[in-house]
Length: 77
Image (tube, rainbow, N blue to C red; front, top):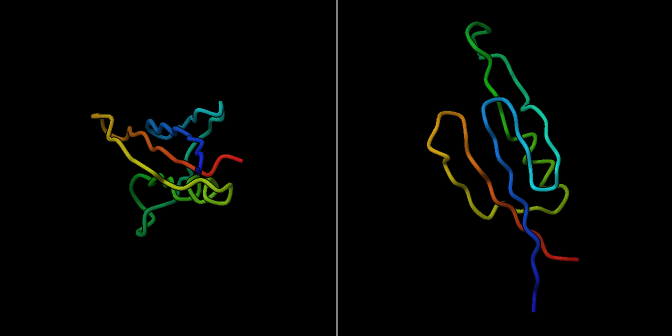
């Protein structure tokens, strides 16, 4: 029977932390026009988790702007 391990990723504003005790800031990129506020992207962070074998299993909006939790799983080794 397949066994799984799980990772919880919490994003709050420009920062993130996960259940493996890692943390950091999201990548920022300028808007297309080059003016206005920069956008924050979690794609680079999530692509890195994919490279580690993690697959997105669930997503929860934390009810406040720019805050959410993503849940990942991968086969237990």
